[in-house]
Length: 90
Image 1 (cartoon, helix red, strand yellow):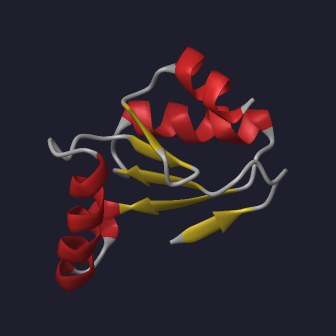
Image 2 (tube, rainbow, N blue to C red):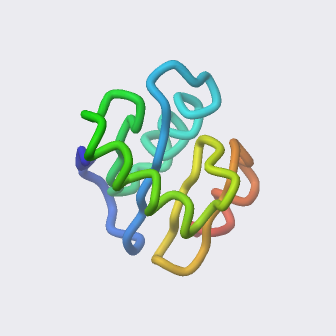
Image 3 (cartoon, rainbow, N blue to C red):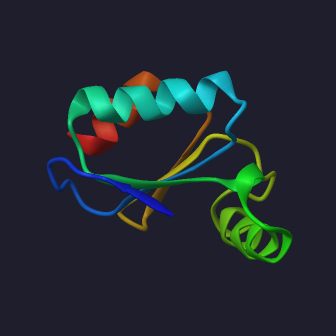
């Protein structure tokens, strides 16, 4: 899990794939908004760690699609939805 510095808007975790354009756009939006967040490229993890992380993703997003953005441990935005992300972080 990597940490990006910024304004604390509560715990924000991005589960992403390194090859996914929508994951990269979500990451870029978070950086543009200047918020602190954690992210992980699930496909780059070793097998055991990847399996464990996928179980965490499944809790929030049973279809395990990417990006999965967990905000304040209470909401998961699936896919790149700029409006929802901006509203959730505001």
